[in-house]
Length: 231
Image 1 (cartoon, rainbow, N blue to C red):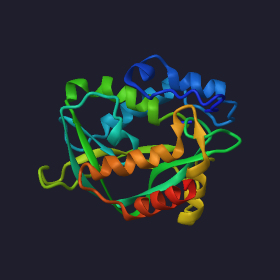
Image 2 (tube, rainbow, N blue to C red; image 1 turned 45 degrees about the horizontal axis):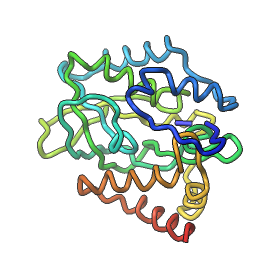
Image 3 (cartoon, one colour; image 1 turned 30 degrees about the horizontal axis):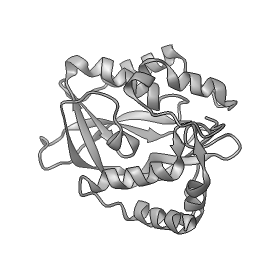
Image 4 (spheres, rainbow, N blue to C red; image 1 turned 120 degrees about the vertical axis):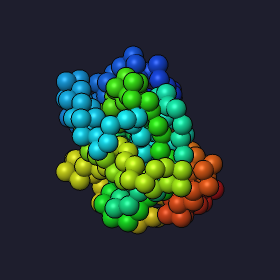
């Protein structure tokens, strides 16, 4: 998420904050010129995504970044999974939340190619609309992500199970093509916004992944570089 920091008064991304429209207020105060999706556009996006569910039933949501360690939605279970055709990448500049318009941070997206290990959350179908509406308020703010169904691979999942993943929209104005790990670390080490330091977003993600015995060597190298920058 994205906004200016002022006196570095940090705000947690909680379930209650999402319900109360905090993200929209944060954007309105930020001074950014990014286009924000309307409530109707978000509603249509959610409805279209659920309508495209390959097999009726409970809804699985694939998490690869902050949703792992701060989901802020209710779920029935979670487990580590693999998806193919997409990889985790710091490819979205964020002038709100983990940065400012003057000094944007970087957050994660799923970019094309490779594979990605993350965590899948199962949401009972009877609760899916209400719970995913909160997720859409959080992730589908500026249209930087494209929600799509991807195949989930996990030892405890039925073969052929699919889940929703937020993939990067390469046409978004704040999409960033891959840069060096050193340059990525430099940005992450120095950016801060309403939601906190960009480096904490990185560290919380690596710790969240590690709690499921997932080790992303690319993220871990960036984390080491950020740590060296701080030292």
